[in-house]
Length: 493
Image (cartoon, rainbow, N blue to C red; front, side):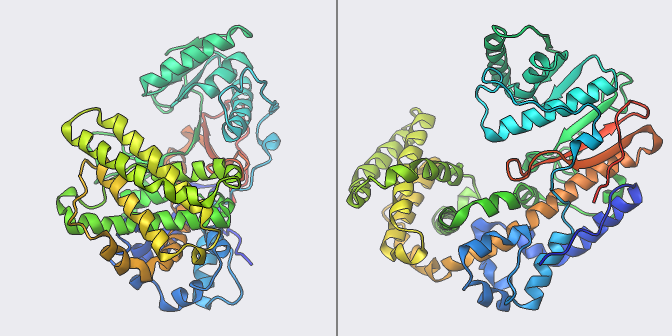
């Protein structure tokens, strides 16, 4: 049961109507969008959620919670909850991969050989294969003699365009390290290919630029009007239309726009539980900071423990079958010792980065083992086990912040205080994550509307070009100058 998207973005007027509908929908849910999950316990965020929703979802399976961002509901849910999820889904830009052969003349994607695909994972390989074919098709249709890859990263796309499609490519990236990696990789590929990669205004200002193909990414890094330097061109809002409705995002919303419904759906029960548990630990750790280290600030970053732990968990699933359960607990004393040593070194000013990394490795390994050996349900993880993990999480977090754990910190008391509400964090986070695809839709529509507002100077279209199951961030915005030779007719709904 799902509502289909009823909006279109073929014209500026239609796009603005869609944007206004999103703005009207999200206003009553600022308590979900603007809140920080790290403050879940400190600010008692669950109290802002409809009590009927909580009572219903507390009994739902993890799998059902993970499907909420995809707009999937259960028949027995309260009517208001179903209406919320389905209406939200109806406002999200559809992600089914477009029929690219109907849009791009001579679109011929090819599977990359082992030489060009070196270093690419499945996602990157899929993206480069599709996008390089689109760029090649567009360049041919427009008789373009060069391609500029802005934000080229390690040069995967630029090198495929140069070596496979025989295009002259300018690769630009802000990170000098990426440039070195790109050059080194190009030297290896040159043994098998001969091609040209050159090291080089905007579409509206530069007569030589005939088209732009933009893929959204890293919305958390967007500059925003009112939040950043007034002298720069803001990443949001770009369009006059969005500016006219006085709609702002803020850091929390920009972070949330990075959440992918496809990623949530693919997590599975065990990884989902692990995800919720990590958020509970981080929110409880915030209670420690709030009580014992108020000078630290609101929500400091303590590293990407969650992603590292999930990656390790996937790699170790098979290995874990061979591990003895007691080995999980035998590691605890040595790890505590390592943390103490690392913290003392950090405070003495020696090699902070190296020792912090060491802490992370130890704690990641500990968390992974504990998570794998405690089974696939929360009930099989005892209260003592979770407290032990929480204490290690706190010790690691404090060390990363340059704070030495004190004997006066009552970790056990804080954990016992939040423990009755731990099961609610998965519900809250799932409801909040449902806004991720909607906020991304808003950002994309703002960019499209900016182009549409230029009138006849540009022709623009927005369409999903990647398989969302492989690459969830799959929407491209394509703009070209009239008569540039590429089809711009595509249904946007």
